[in-house]
Length: 131
Length: 401
Ligand SMILES: [Zn+2]
Image 1 (cartoon, chains in turn brown, purple):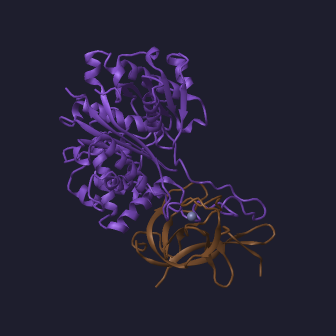
Image 2 (spheres, rainbow over the protein chains, first blue to last red):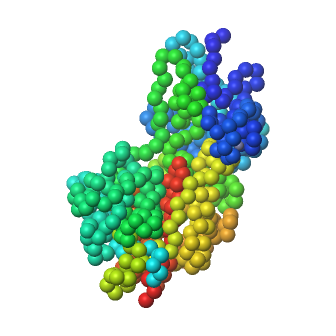
Image 3 (cartoon, rainbow over the protein chains, first blue to last red):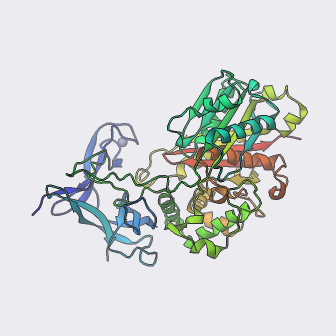
């Protein structure tokens, strides 16, 4: 099997793919990107926290017009994963307002987005409707 | 008038729209000369200048304007603060006057954006031969379109949808009707970029940019400039009765940034910093939302206008849909909002916007707004927000007769 690399470093691959955040050890604030110090409290200690893989759509848009090279339409959304807000695309759902709705339960899913010259496959993520 | 008060002595905006024959400095100079003339003063009276242009790549726009209208050697502050750049220039001059460093100052903002497309997004630089994690997210490939969207119509669409999720009552049609109001208002504004009244069907059937925002529900990219001359209360007392009569009091001037909140790094939170700015502004002015006769708020997208009814406390918390449904924000309603046509039809030459919305309010407070005059307007509020984020709120009050 080809080697894999996550699209972003906060996507953890393996048997149970999930997102992980830098969690402030002082106040518990979570950040997906690298931080010099906590934006909430200023402390500099962080630990790693696994993010729930199921959540609820709290906001979405269906982008029909994007920068060149970006396939449209696609659904961009904010998903509340057990108290942590996550930005992601909604996938495996028709990108129209009849099929995407606020409050809809979703779950994390991963998929290949392409391979580089060495054959390493990059893996992206999105959220899909959960029954 | 108290010596501590700050007043707008002169203010002006150019026609917003396409100005193919005028460059940015022409537009800024035109607004500046008109603001000086409106205030009955010259560049010799100006002790401080603050100037902004967002797409200027660091060019010293203030000095460039001085070279057209008067190089007097006074300090110039070139500022940028996203869509709040104009309000930041205004506020910079106000702070300088408050600090006693000048008794009169000039704020100017200008942008050339006619024909510009999406102003953000597409941070895609395709990766090299091998996947290489880059940046603070360790991304091996561009994320716009793969992990949500960076385009403003999409970001603000989600902001409106989030409000709907929290409080209910929103729909594509509701957002489109907000846009319908602003396009209807624009027909009375000769300086607006677009002055065509659009039907609800025309708005909903237009090109979808990012659901639920169609093209006419997005702010219009255009060229334009606006400028204001500000003066201390002490200085104003030495000027003519006519200048004093037309001066408009800056009852509050506030700039805020976004405090940390869960979720605000994922989707910008434009709500809390606006509410914070409004709270501070009402307190500074000793006034409340019930005292306002008109509001110019930052309707960069139809979805944004809705949330700011609530953030500026024009309605009860959670009550923005009901506020709109009551007809209140129409020009003949209880609290007219964006009688200029707003950013969706008046246009949004970014750095000019935070001064142009103050101009609109002043125009009404002075009783000079012609066909679109809000009768007997005494107090108005102007609001802008720039993502990043920065929020400017100014409350303006008519001079006592
Ligand atoms: Zn912290």
